[in-house]
Length: 568
Image (tube, rainbow, N blue to C red; front, top):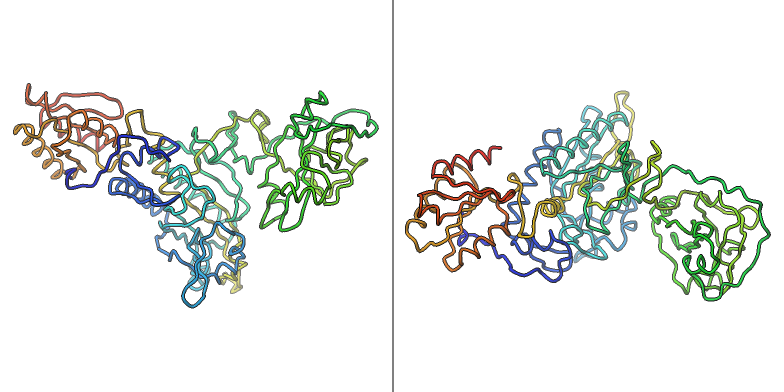
């Protein structure tokens, strides 16, 4: 391929709305272009790389025995009503109405579609097991699209669904997909860590995220044990409960004036007490009902755990006006004593003695509060977020905390969808039983961007050779020179004949420096510079983009070098 016949619009300056390096580079190197917030076009250079990632995914999924199909992107509301997810997905789902007034959605995922297929076509245990997969565009109306393809509103996903006759057989299918994911990301040169995760809107009892460690904040936070390797998303992580029961004599309850001090920090400083001796009181509206949630002052409440505890469809923090209407006091002055709404406390509160909480009166707090004596909780549950330094529940080693990029997610669904959609098969005894399911997703565009995020330097992208859109780029420094022009074209023709994906920079209007800068920016693994060495020695200068190594080789040596590198 010659650049003048291709379409590769590179940029010199960083795009203003790109927040992270991989996003900047994918725009500068001509891989993608933004159409709207969270909506991107793949340009030819980016699409070739994307297809290379898809190829790896297909090969590993096929090797694992999965069967590729393709569902419609648009699905009728009735299917989603069967599972209740038309309402559960809420504003994140794109909903449309046809000319007859019938509602459809643009698929954020395809559990309903695949279960509908299975209940129609898989009638007997003899038809099982089956694993179906597709690579298709998904749609989610992200409240804050960001980081390019990392959190987009339209994105490419590989989603797979397994159907089995028993939980034991689900374990086999799940292990096949788990292993396939490890192989896929290894072939993409990404060091993924499988971590325990919350199942979110997909559901199921067990799920794993496949994440790569990244400096990218606000994506996926997780904790990992450096000793035994246990790892979990902070939304799902448990920790060893080592808080000792505070051995103190219960002191008389006191109401004290705290003036305008409201935050944990302010009240802690004012009373000269550690944050661990205070509690946070937070009001949540859960499926339309208000609850008071209590955690220790040095902990953070985990909204995912709280939502899961109540199996809630919706959860939102109450506004200041709502809080005042309930408690007749503002946020920061409320507490569980004489609470007008039900109270749910984190289980660590049970071990506290003589703590401080709001008095449900502006400017006042209670001191020496004790659960059981001064108030009772309606619910006790682990609703805190695990922190770095908390102890691993398996071996007791302090956790390390990391930021990560989630690339894949696997779920053991069980009968969650088959029961709701009455999807059954006949077992060996002729009895109807519900399908036992798993589902498995990989963000294809996310994986591509994660590769760019990992493999780059201050000059541009450094493609792994199996992902690179082209394996070699020929960079003639002066096409007006007949010898350079002829040798460059001859080399290009040879690589095409050998089946090597090659790009020839045949632009006459750019200087050698501009071509070198572009070559480093787009990051093709092998660069062949046709210029000074050819004029002096009749040879070519071969540069390895990843290491910067340079070799001066004759024509056949250059061809052999490239062929060997591609084979490796």
